[in-house]
Amino acid sequence: MAKNLRWRGILFAGTITAMAGFVDGVGFVHFGGYFLSFMSGNSTRSSAALMTGDVTGWINAMSLVASFVAGVVIATLMTSPLAALRRPVAMYFSAALLLAAAATGTIQPHATALLLAAAMGVVNVSYTRSGEVSLGLTYMTGTLVKLGQALGGAILSVLTGSNRGTNRLLWLRYAVLWAMITVGSLGGVLAYLHLGLGSLWIVGAGMLLWATLALLQELRAKGELPADATSGAHRELIE
Image 1 (cartoon, rainbow, N blue to C red):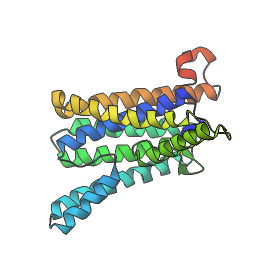
Image 2 (cartoon, rainbow, N blue to C red):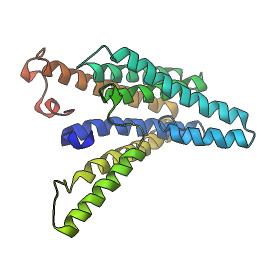
Image 3 (spheres, one colour):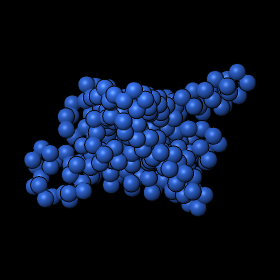
């Protein structure tokens, strides 16, 4: 789907990806190497823990995977009857879970981790087409594969002197998405080192703001808001 988005849409999705990276950075440091948005890593860790006799580690990893999937399931049930408002509803739900996790903080650390994983599962439902996720926001392996394919296609196009309908700069879109999650995780770790789990209030507020921008865009597109209700910078931000 990234190739069908305008650059403003890429930046909008990339900001969500940066927030996912922020959450992962905070969680990785605070919870000792567990992931909150990257479930492939937790799946590998659960297997390693099980085979080395670390039952607690296996339970911790698998509970995060289960919470992530539960978030996707609940968000799918919530948003499936919706049309244009699917994205902002999913993002508002994710923001609520992030803020709940910030509120629990160190009082219930495992509950905090589960809420964060669920929030990451929920936000992936915000980019859905025909009932399936069309743009992975919190996992970058597929994005890197597409980046490599697009870059390979661009190189072939240059070497052969034929475009063949290839967008030589398509790889940049995928590179931006990958860079955003990387920068976001860097910001998450930096914020955690100064604020601890209090840094979760930052990402919760950020998701709330971004959900509101998505809602304003959807309402304007439906004609429920006047054309000047959102600024020009916001009108095409998520398209």
